[in-house]
Image (cartoon, rainbow, N blue to C red):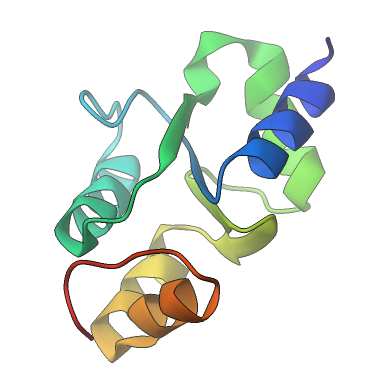
Amino acid sequence: MSARDEIADAVAKNDVVLFMKGTPQFPQCGFSGQVVQILDYLGVPYQGVNVLASDEMRQGIKEFSNWPTIPQLYVKGEFVGGCDIVREMFQAGELQTHMKEAGVPVKQPA
């Protein structure tokens, strides 16, 4: 299975997917760590994918989304954004609303 197939598979099978450096338990960069903190705070169930596992995966996710940076958050198959976008949406209450509208359970209210 190619990296692109693995990415498409993860996005299709999980309501919320975070392509990140490291794992949700051990983020390997500050930006990935910030998105993990936000998702954990919201209590959103999500799948973390460690792009550091292979160069093919790290490059593949950038091509898949046409977005140059990592982390990358997908909700219900839709690319939401990277750390800055996710943080801004969270602070404005838009991320919580977006999750709820997508049918993803959120424990913390907006």
